[in-house]
Amino acid sequence: MEEVAKMNRAFYERYQKLDDGEEFWRLMMAPLRQSIRINTLKAPLEYVKARLEERYELEPIPWVKEGFFINTREFGDMIEYALGLVFPQEASSMIPPVVLDPKPRELVLDMAAAPGAKTTQIAQYMKNEGCIIANDLKKWRANVLIANLNRFGVLNARVTVKDGIYFSRFENTFDRVLLDAPCSSVGMIRKSFKFLTDWSMKKVIRYSNIQKKLIVAAYKALKPGGVLVYSTCTIDPLENEEVVDYLLSKTDAKLEKINLPLKSTPPVLEFEGKKYSEEVKKCLRIHPQDNNTEAFFIAKIRKP
Ligand SMILES: C[S@@+](CC[C@H](N)C(=O)[O-])C[C@H]1O[C@@H](n2cnc3c(N)ncnc32)[C@H](O)[C@@H]1O
Image (cartoon, rainbow, N blue to C red; front, top):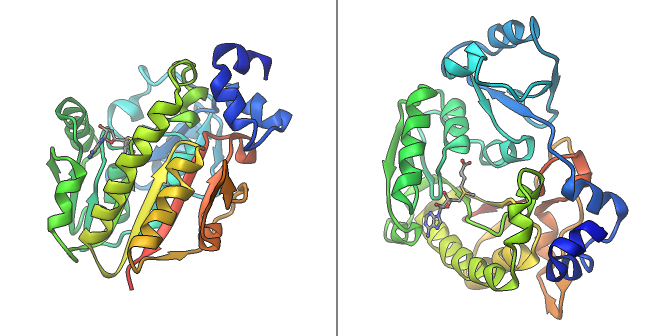
Protein backbone atom coordinates (compact mmCIF):
# COMPACT_ATOMS: atom_id res chain seq x y z
CA MET A 1 0.00 0.00 0.00
CA GLU A 2 2.71 2.44 1.01
CA GLU A 3 4.64 1.41 -2.06
CA VAL A 4 1.64 2.30 -4.26
CA ALA A 5 1.07 5.61 -2.49
CA LYS A 6 4.75 6.48 -2.90
CA MET A 7 4.64 5.75 -6.63
CA ASN A 8 1.38 7.61 -7.33
CA ARG A 9 -0.51 9.23 -4.45
CA ALA A 10 -3.53 10.37 -6.51
CA PHE A 11 -3.98 6.79 -7.74
CA TYR A 12 -3.84 5.41 -4.22
CA GLU A 13 -6.27 7.96 -2.83
CA ARG A 14 -8.83 7.33 -5.58
CA TYR A 15 -8.87 3.53 -5.52
CA GLN A 16 -8.63 3.25 -1.77
CA LYS A 17 -12.28 4.39 -1.90
CA LEU A 18 -13.08 1.47 -4.20
CA ASP A 19 -11.33 -1.39 -2.42
CA ASP A 20 -9.01 -0.95 0.50
CA GLY A 21 -8.32 -4.58 1.38
CA GLU A 22 -4.75 -5.70 1.93
CA GLU A 23 -5.13 -8.40 -0.71
CA PHE A 24 -6.36 -5.86 -3.27
CA TRP A 25 -3.19 -3.80 -2.92
CA ARG A 26 -0.89 -6.79 -2.64
CA LEU A 27 -2.21 -8.41 -5.82
CA MET A 28 -2.38 -5.09 -7.65
CA MET A 29 1.43 -5.11 -7.50
CA ALA A 30 2.31 -8.85 -7.56
CA PRO A 31 3.70 -10.34 -10.81
CA LEU A 32 1.11 -12.17 -12.92
CA ARG A 33 0.91 -15.93 -13.32
CA GLN A 34 1.85 -16.83 -16.88
CA SER A 35 -0.93 -18.28 -18.98
CA ILE A 36 -1.46 -19.47 -22.56
CA ARG A 37 -4.32 -20.24 -24.90
CA ILE A 38 -4.02 -23.24 -27.18
CA ASN A 39 -4.81 -22.33 -30.79
CA THR A 40 -7.18 -24.98 -32.11
CA LEU A 41 -7.12 -23.44 -35.60
CA LYS A 42 -3.83 -25.23 -36.17
CA ALA A 43 -4.01 -28.44 -34.16
CA PRO A 44 -6.38 -30.32 -31.82
CA LEU A 45 -6.40 -29.12 -28.21
CA GLU A 46 -5.54 -32.51 -26.69
CA TYR A 47 -2.59 -32.97 -29.04
CA VAL A 48 -0.96 -29.64 -28.17
CA LYS A 49 -1.76 -30.04 -24.49
CA ALA A 50 -0.15 -33.52 -24.38
CA ARG A 51 2.98 -32.19 -26.10
CA LEU A 52 3.30 -29.31 -23.65
CA GLU A 53 2.71 -31.58 -20.65
CA GLU A 54 5.84 -33.53 -21.53
CA ARG A 55 7.85 -30.44 -20.55
CA TYR A 56 5.67 -28.08 -18.51
CA GLU A 57 3.08 -28.06 -15.77
CA LEU A 58 -0.31 -26.92 -17.04
CA GLU A 59 -3.20 -25.89 -14.82
CA PRO A 60 -6.59 -25.43 -16.52
CA ILE A 61 -8.12 -21.95 -16.41
CA PRO A 62 -11.68 -22.71 -15.20
CA TRP A 63 -13.44 -20.16 -17.46
CA VAL A 64 -11.87 -21.05 -20.81
CA LYS A 65 -11.46 -24.57 -22.15
CA GLU A 66 -8.37 -23.71 -24.21
CA GLY A 67 -6.63 -21.70 -21.46
CA PHE A 68 -3.93 -22.92 -19.07
CA PHE A 69 -1.61 -21.44 -16.47
CA ILE A 70 1.91 -22.59 -17.33
CA ASN A 71 5.15 -22.68 -15.36
CA THR A 72 7.35 -20.93 -17.91
CA ARG A 73 7.81 -17.44 -19.27
CA GLU A 74 10.35 -18.57 -21.85
CA PHE A 75 8.58 -18.68 -25.19
CA GLY A 76 11.61 -18.00 -27.34
CA ASP A 77 12.68 -21.64 -27.37
CA MET A 78 9.19 -23.18 -27.30
CA ILE A 79 8.49 -24.86 -30.65
CA GLU A 80 4.70 -24.75 -30.12
CA TYR A 81 4.97 -20.98 -29.76
CA ALA A 82 7.09 -20.64 -32.89
CA LEU A 83 4.45 -22.67 -34.79
CA GLY A 84 1.56 -20.51 -33.58
CA LEU A 85 0.04 -23.35 -31.56
CA VAL A 86 0.01 -21.36 -28.31
CA PHE A 87 -0.78 -17.70 -27.65
CA PRO A 88 0.60 -16.24 -24.40
CA GLN A 89 -2.47 -14.41 -23.09
CA GLU A 90 -3.48 -13.22 -19.66
CA ALA A 91 -6.18 -15.42 -18.11
CA SER A 92 -8.78 -12.68 -17.53
CA SER A 93 -8.28 -11.27 -21.03
CA MET A 94 -9.64 -14.58 -22.38
CA ILE A 95 -13.06 -13.79 -20.85
CA PRO A 96 -14.52 -11.27 -23.38
CA PRO A 97 -14.45 -13.68 -26.39
CA VAL A 98 -15.97 -16.42 -24.19
CA VAL A 99 -18.82 -14.04 -23.29
CA LEU A 100 -19.14 -12.89 -26.93
CA ASP A 101 -19.57 -16.56 -27.91
CA PRO A 102 -19.28 -16.07 -31.70
CA LYS A 103 -20.47 -18.83 -34.03
CA PRO A 104 -19.15 -20.07 -37.38
CA ARG A 105 -20.54 -18.12 -40.35
CA GLU A 106 -21.42 -14.99 -38.33
CA LEU A 107 -20.29 -11.45 -39.11
CA VAL A 108 -18.28 -10.07 -36.16
CA LEU A 109 -16.75 -6.66 -35.54
CA ASP A 110 -13.70 -6.45 -33.27
CA MET A 111 -13.58 -2.67 -32.97
CA ALA A 112 -10.26 -2.21 -31.14
CA ALA A 113 -8.46 -5.37 -32.09
CA ALA A 114 -4.67 -4.95 -32.01
CA PRO A 115 -2.49 -6.85 -31.19
CA GLY A 116 -5.11 -9.54 -31.78
CA ALA A 117 -5.21 -11.81 -28.74
CA LYS A 118 -8.99 -11.68 -28.73
CA THR A 119 -9.37 -11.67 -32.54
CA THR A 120 -7.46 -14.94 -32.79
CA GLN A 121 -9.60 -16.38 -29.99
CA ILE A 122 -12.78 -15.26 -31.78
CA ALA A 123 -11.57 -16.87 -35.05
CA GLN A 124 -10.93 -20.07 -33.09
CA TYR A 125 -14.54 -20.14 -31.84
CA MET A 126 -15.78 -19.38 -35.39
CA LYS A 127 -13.68 -22.27 -36.73
CA ASN A 128 -12.32 -19.83 -39.33
CA GLU A 129 -15.76 -19.51 -40.94
CA GLY A 130 -17.82 -16.35 -41.42
CA CYS A 131 -16.04 -13.01 -41.19
CA ILE A 132 -14.34 -10.84 -38.58
CA ILE A 133 -13.70 -7.17 -39.25
CA ALA A 134 -10.65 -6.57 -37.05
CA ASN A 135 -10.13 -2.84 -36.65
CA ASP A 136 -7.66 -0.60 -34.86
CA LEU A 137 -7.04 3.12 -34.90
CA LYS A 138 -3.27 2.79 -35.04
CA LYS A 139 -1.55 1.57 -38.17
CA TRP A 140 1.57 0.27 -36.43
CA ARG A 141 -0.58 -1.74 -34.05
CA ALA A 142 -2.67 -3.02 -36.98
CA ASN A 143 0.57 -4.34 -38.50
CA VAL A 144 1.22 -6.37 -35.35
CA LEU A 145 -2.39 -7.56 -35.56
CA ILE A 146 -1.88 -8.72 -39.17
CA ALA A 147 1.31 -10.56 -38.19
CA ASN A 148 -0.56 -12.35 -35.38
CA LEU A 149 -3.50 -13.28 -37.62
CA ASN A 150 -1.05 -14.83 -40.09
CA ARG A 151 0.93 -16.60 -37.42
CA PHE A 152 -2.15 -18.11 -35.79
CA GLY A 153 -3.71 -19.28 -39.06
CA VAL A 154 -6.70 -16.92 -39.02
CA LEU A 155 -8.33 -17.01 -42.47
CA ASN A 156 -11.65 -15.25 -41.86
CA ALA A 157 -10.50 -11.76 -40.80
CA ARG A 158 -10.21 -8.51 -42.67
CA VAL A 159 -8.15 -5.74 -41.05
CA THR A 160 -9.18 -2.08 -41.14
CA VAL A 161 -7.46 1.00 -39.74
CA LYS A 162 -10.21 3.41 -38.65
CA ASP A 163 -11.44 5.29 -35.66
CA GLY A 164 -14.03 2.88 -34.22
CA ILE A 165 -16.63 5.63 -34.45
CA TYR A 166 -16.55 5.13 -38.25
CA PHE A 167 -18.53 1.88 -37.84
CA SER A 168 -21.64 3.68 -36.61
CA ARG A 169 -22.57 4.16 -40.27
CA PHE A 170 -23.03 0.35 -40.68
CA GLU A 171 -26.27 0.35 -38.72
CA ASN A 172 -27.75 -3.00 -37.65
CA THR A 173 -25.03 -4.95 -39.53
CA PHE A 174 -22.99 -7.20 -37.22
CA ASP A 175 -24.15 -10.34 -35.43
CA ARG A 176 -21.67 -9.64 -32.62
CA VAL A 177 -19.41 -6.75 -31.70
CA LEU A 178 -16.47 -6.76 -29.30
CA LEU A 179 -15.35 -3.40 -27.94
CA ASP A 180 -12.22 -4.15 -25.94
CA ALA A 181 -11.75 -0.48 -25.29
CA PRO A 182 -8.61 1.61 -24.96
CA CYS A 183 -8.38 2.35 -21.22
CA SER A 184 -6.18 3.50 -18.35
CA SER A 185 -4.98 -0.13 -18.00
CA VAL A 186 -4.79 -0.35 -14.22
CA GLY A 187 -4.97 -4.13 -14.60
CA MET A 188 -1.67 -4.03 -16.46
CA ILE A 189 0.25 -2.69 -13.44
CA ARG A 190 1.01 -6.34 -12.69
CA LYS A 191 2.92 -6.42 -16.01
CA SER A 192 4.62 -3.05 -15.73
CA PHE A 193 4.72 -0.34 -13.06
CA LYS A 194 4.71 2.16 -15.94
CA PHE A 195 0.88 1.91 -15.84
CA LEU A 196 0.97 3.03 -12.21
CA THR A 197 3.44 5.89 -12.56
CA ASP A 198 1.74 7.13 -15.77
CA TRP A 199 -1.80 7.01 -14.34
CA SER A 200 -3.64 10.32 -13.99
CA MET A 201 -7.23 11.40 -13.44
CA LYS A 202 -7.00 13.46 -16.62
CA LYS A 203 -6.33 10.31 -18.65
CA VAL A 204 -9.22 8.45 -16.98
CA ILE A 205 -11.61 11.25 -17.95
CA ARG A 206 -10.24 11.34 -21.49
CA TYR A 207 -10.65 7.57 -21.87
CA SER A 208 -14.14 7.67 -20.42
CA ASN A 209 -15.21 10.20 -23.06
CA ILE A 210 -13.69 8.13 -25.91
CA GLN A 211 -15.26 4.94 -24.54
CA LYS A 212 -18.74 6.52 -24.49
CA LYS A 213 -18.44 7.47 -28.16
CA LEU A 214 -17.10 4.04 -29.10
CA ILE A 215 -19.78 2.09 -27.22
CA VAL A 216 -22.57 4.05 -28.91
CA ALA A 217 -20.99 3.42 -32.34
CA ALA A 218 -20.53 -0.28 -31.51
CA TYR A 219 -24.17 -0.54 -30.46
CA LYS A 220 -25.37 1.15 -33.64
CA ALA A 221 -23.41 -1.33 -35.75
CA LEU A 222 -25.03 -4.28 -33.96
CA LYS A 223 -27.95 -6.20 -35.52
CA PRO A 224 -31.21 -6.47 -33.54
CA GLY A 225 -30.87 -9.61 -31.44
CA GLY A 226 -27.07 -9.32 -31.58
CA VAL A 227 -24.57 -9.24 -28.71
CA LEU A 228 -22.12 -6.47 -27.87
CA VAL A 229 -19.38 -7.18 -25.35
CA TYR A 230 -17.72 -4.16 -23.74
CA SER A 231 -14.50 -4.78 -21.83
CA THR A 232 -11.60 -2.95 -20.23
CA CYS A 233 -8.58 -4.00 -18.20
CA THR A 234 -9.12 -1.28 -15.66
CA ILE A 235 -11.03 -0.66 -12.44
CA ASP A 236 -12.17 2.95 -12.69
CA PRO A 237 -15.99 3.26 -12.53
CA LEU A 238 -15.79 6.18 -14.98
CA GLU A 239 -14.43 3.76 -17.62
CA ASN A 240 -16.72 0.88 -16.71
CA GLU A 241 -20.10 1.23 -14.99
CA GLU A 242 -20.39 4.87 -16.14
CA VAL A 243 -19.85 3.93 -19.83
CA VAL A 244 -22.38 1.10 -19.69
CA ASP A 245 -24.85 3.27 -17.76
CA TYR A 246 -24.43 5.95 -20.46
CA LEU A 247 -25.32 3.45 -23.21
CA LEU A 248 -28.37 2.25 -21.24
CA SER A 249 -29.57 5.83 -20.83
CA LYS A 250 -29.12 6.74 -24.52
CA THR A 251 -30.41 3.58 -26.23
CA ASP A 252 -32.71 0.58 -25.79
CA ALA A 253 -29.70 -1.66 -24.91
CA LYS A 254 -30.28 -4.46 -22.42
CA LEU A 255 -27.66 -5.96 -20.11
CA GLU A 256 -27.40 -9.71 -19.62
CA LYS A 257 -25.93 -11.52 -16.64
CA ILE A 258 -22.62 -13.30 -17.18
CA ASN A 259 -22.31 -16.71 -15.57
CA LEU A 260 -18.78 -18.07 -15.47
CA PRO A 261 -16.92 -20.17 -12.91
CA LEU A 262 -14.91 -17.35 -11.35
CA LYS A 263 -14.97 -14.92 -8.46
CA SER A 264 -15.82 -11.26 -8.95
CA THR A 265 -16.35 -8.01 -7.08
CA PRO A 266 -19.80 -6.38 -7.00
CA PRO A 267 -20.11 -3.66 -9.67
CA VAL A 268 -20.12 -0.08 -8.43
CA LEU A 269 -23.54 1.59 -8.14
CA GLU A 270 -22.30 4.82 -6.60
CA PHE A 271 -18.88 6.47 -6.65
CA GLU A 272 -17.68 9.99 -6.00
CA GLY A 273 -21.19 11.43 -6.05
CA LYS A 274 -22.29 9.60 -9.24
CA LYS A 275 -25.05 6.99 -9.23
CA TYR A 276 -25.52 4.23 -11.79
CA SER A 277 -28.49 2.10 -12.83
CA GLU A 278 -29.11 -1.06 -10.76
CA GLU A 279 -28.86 -2.89 -14.09
CA VAL A 280 -25.04 -2.56 -14.04
CA LYS A 281 -25.07 -5.22 -11.30
CA LYS A 282 -25.17 -7.69 -14.22
CA CYS A 283 -21.64 -6.68 -15.31
CA LEU A 284 -18.56 -8.59 -14.30
CA ARG A 285 -16.06 -6.53 -12.27
CA ILE A 286 -12.89 -8.48 -11.54
CA HIS A 287 -10.32 -7.21 -9.05
CA PRO A 288 -6.81 -8.71 -9.01
CA GLN A 289 -7.38 -10.66 -5.78
CA ASP A 290 -10.60 -12.33 -7.00
CA ASN A 291 -8.85 -14.96 -9.14
CA ASN A 292 -5.21 -13.81 -8.96
CA THR A 293 -5.41 -12.29 -12.46
CA GLU A 294 -5.28 -8.89 -14.06
CA ALA A 295 -8.21 -6.62 -13.18
CA PHE A 296 -10.97 -6.70 -15.81
CA PHE A 297 -14.48 -5.40 -16.46
CA ILE A 298 -16.90 -7.07 -18.87
CA ALA A 299 -20.45 -6.18 -19.89
CA LYS A 300 -22.71 -8.30 -22.09
CA ILE A 301 -25.24 -6.18 -23.96
CA ARG A 302 -28.05 -7.27 -26.25
CA LYS A 303 -29.96 -5.20 -28.80
CA PRO A 304 -33.67 -6.03 -28.59
C1 LIG B 1 -7.06 -2.82 -25.01
S1 LIG B 1 -6.30 -2.58 -26.55
C2 LIG B 1 -6.98 -3.88 -27.50
C3 LIG B 1 -6.40 -5.24 -27.23
C4 LIG B 1 -6.91 -6.30 -28.19
N1 LIG B 1 -8.36 -6.37 -28.21
C5 LIG B 1 -6.34 -7.67 -27.88
O1 LIG B 1 -7.02 -8.46 -27.22
O2 LIG B 1 -5.22 -7.99 -28.31
C6 LIG B 1 -7.13 -1.19 -27.18
C7 LIG B 1 -6.82 -0.85 -28.62
O3 LIG B 1 -7.67 0.23 -29.00
C8 LIG B 1 -7.01 0.96 -30.01
N2 LIG B 1 -7.73 2.26 -30.12
C9 LIG B 1 -7.54 3.41 -29.44
N3 LIG B 1 -8.44 4.33 -29.81
C10 LIG B 1 -9.24 3.76 -30.76
C11 LIG B 1 -10.34 4.21 -31.54
N4 LIG B 1 -10.82 5.44 -31.41
N5 LIG B 1 -10.89 3.35 -32.43
C12 LIG B 1 -10.41 2.09 -32.57
N6 LIG B 1 -9.35 1.61 -31.85
C13 LIG B 1 -8.79 2.43 -30.96
C14 LIG B 1 -5.59 1.03 -29.52
O4 LIG B 1 -4.70 1.29 -30.60
C15 LIG B 1 -5.40 -0.36 -28.91
O5 LIG B 1 -4.80 -1.24 -29.81
